Length: 336
Ligand code: ADE
Ligand code: ZN
Figure 1: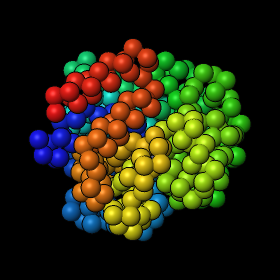
Figure 2: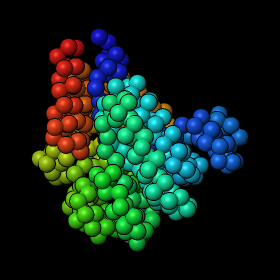
Figure 3: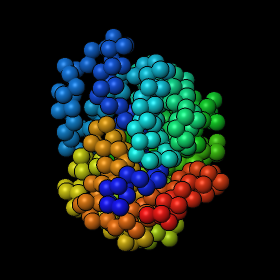
Figure 4: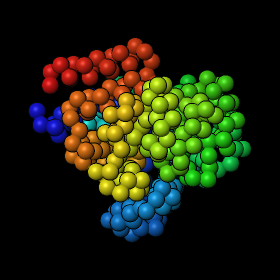
């Protein structure tokens, strides 16, 4: 089997996906029309031409503007369902998705509206497409601690739908310690924790995520490689890194895909995984990410299998489900 077919057919788990970042321009225009909203861009092509970013902040500005179109429960359902249909066609069999409630509650859309739409689509994805899932609520780090606490408070009524909390948005200048108390409160309520760290921010933010926020996984983590002691800690603890190759390229975290640290991470024994982050903005879902990084770094089938195994093992699926998912990967490996 050629490497492209191998990537496409390999059972995969996605652990780093912002549902608002899967908002394709076509659906955005459709929902805008339905809600009587006029977008700044006159058509799909001019919107797509704006998807040229020099850094994380330039992307975030456009990403939050796009999310403003989402207003009703059906909007959140349609957004999530479109993502699930897409990944189903790519043999992604388990997904752990972030949603950013503050992006919506800040502009007057109720928490209940957001989570009910997303959750109903996830349930349909499980029953109709066989995709298992975990929902992660992410705090926006450019907002203050009080707003994060309010969001945690709102989430308590939906504890059965949310397994973990995360931390995203503008990294530099918003270090983990800003959210130490709210993460502690979240852990006391039984939530697992993850955080974006070391995407643009320094290795110290990865230390902070581990030591102060007590995360089970690091989202991105690229800049961990600048710190030998940190690498050792991440390897010893087998902390999963949810790496996002196309995102790193589009946000200029790497200059060229050939400079991407993914292969080095595997060689160092880090538990790296491949993810799409915000696929509608960065030019690809899981298979495109795997393809791009495989071509640039000449990854072997053994390395691809390792990446997929890392994701299943690093997932928040319960033990039984995790074993069933890993068995699917074992079967694929045995037959290919
Ligand atoms: N929100 C959506 N995508 C993000 C990323 N890559 N980093 C930080 N915040 C985000
Ligand atoms: Zn992200």
